Length: 186
Picture 1 (cartoon, helix red, strand yellow):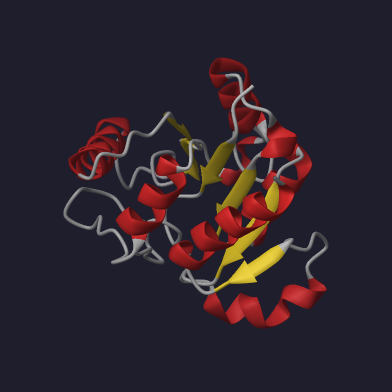
Picture 2 (picture 1 turned 90 degrees about the horizontal axis):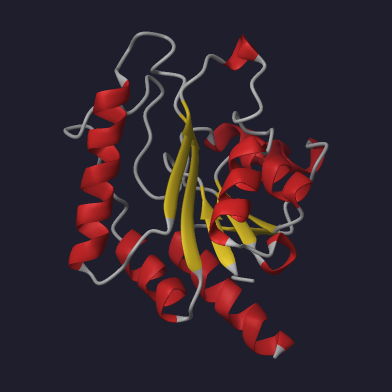
């Protein structure tokens, strides 16, 4: 079985917007994203993006535009020698009740089956309580990065029903923490 780092997209890998990232012009990686993912990829982790994209259901963008953003993400990472094992996204409205929208874990379980991932040996890194809840429900260790647009909610982390295992300022710190934890376990 493979180890993975499941990654939220907006607010974790790239700058987020309160009115969604709708096209490639609006998509901009954080300055340390490539360095962070390079460390994890070089350590043998499968890198898997798990993202909610309700902007499709809301008519703000299209599936084709979301796919273009993901092609751009893959291209930027490929140029640095990094390959994403998969990108799984939910295009549904939050009220749809689907299993693929975080905090539900349909996309995580699908990725785990398709890519032979050991969830208990994996991590989920994201910028929201939904990411933490999804990662925990799937059996992963969870890391909250405080880079998202919901920064005001980070003051209330202690009140969240599901607590992250770790809270760090950004993805590079999360990557370094994962590698440190792995060294201690081996």
